[in-house]
Length: 127
Image 1: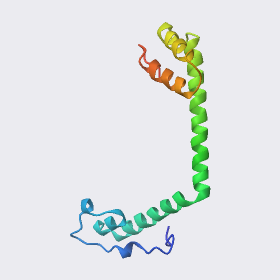
Image 2: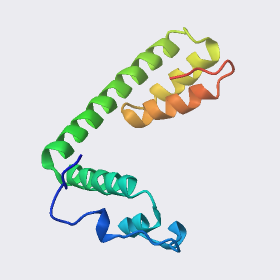
Image 3: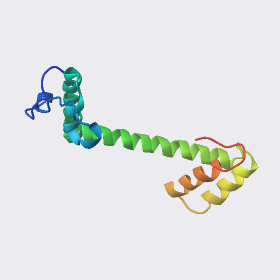
């Protein structure tokens, strides 16, 4: 991270001010409160890397793909937990809750309701 990320300047555009208070500054202006200029430069470059990544369509697409995969995995886990609860693996109270929730319809909203309900069952079920 030695070279500037883009032509937006550098940390030296925000020179150290010994009287600067972080609490009163916003955005990159906070760099004025950092006496260690190497650290300020590192933070400046890190900021622009994050900015670039947020705007990069490939980065955004990758993050959205990861979020979809996580949602699919969560749904699989909830389905598995619901199946086990319905089969009585977690005991009678969880089985009763699972049957009541799952008989009400299909979809994520019912699985989320099941997840929340199962957390209230004695012996607390994680998942």
